[in-house]
Image: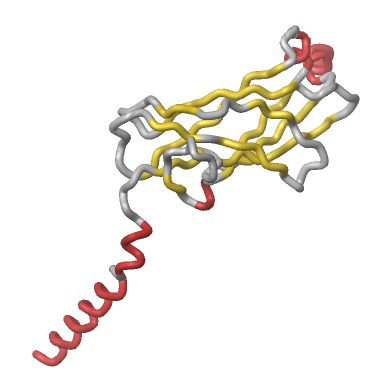
Length: 170
């Protein structure tokens, strides 16, 4: 019976040793890192978006802090990269840097502008990636989760959507 208990304890100790190797612990330290809250953002631009005189539409993205809460404001940078899944790219106007100021929470919303594309008949889809610019010297966060480092932006231009809806139902 003693041999069985010692054998089980030896297996348990080996499992703990293998599960907590030094290399693994380094990957999960609590330094503040930044991630996008969602992986995909879809917005439909309809007729009412084009009635306004302003050529830009305002949109937003949400970031989430990974690790310890911040003790002071930190800056981060975002850039636009092309998405080969879309034939058309959208013109996104970003700030040179964004500042995370909500120190008592892990999520914050930030805003950017898109240049509304020209309306063409039918349904047109535009897209790109929004990702953290880790190479920018103004970026003050460590790299977060790989799967949350970029957000897919998709904009659907649907002309006649509102007028078709009103003719059908009202």
